[in-house]
Length: 128
Image (cartoon, rainbow, N blue to C red):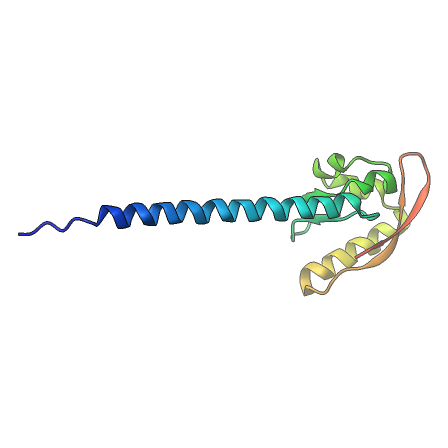
């Protein structure tokens, strides 16, 4: 019975190729993240991402939200109750209905809502 042994030179080359491809993918991922962060940090808009489920968590919030609504981005990441705390009571039901419609249909939600900053100032926001 012959024992078949892998060609160790070919195997070593494959591992090196795999490592090189992995390093290149990591480099591209790092560059993409850096570009994304640069854009998000310079936009005069509150850009956010949240879980596509009712009452799901906010997973990302741009720094501009602090200038717009007077609340740090971190506060949005700590829990979704901040949305209800800030949105004007007269707009709350409509905003939740728009959000639920988006979750059910996949059609982009959107609307103009009033938010009340902690300093009492009312701010109109187009949410899309």
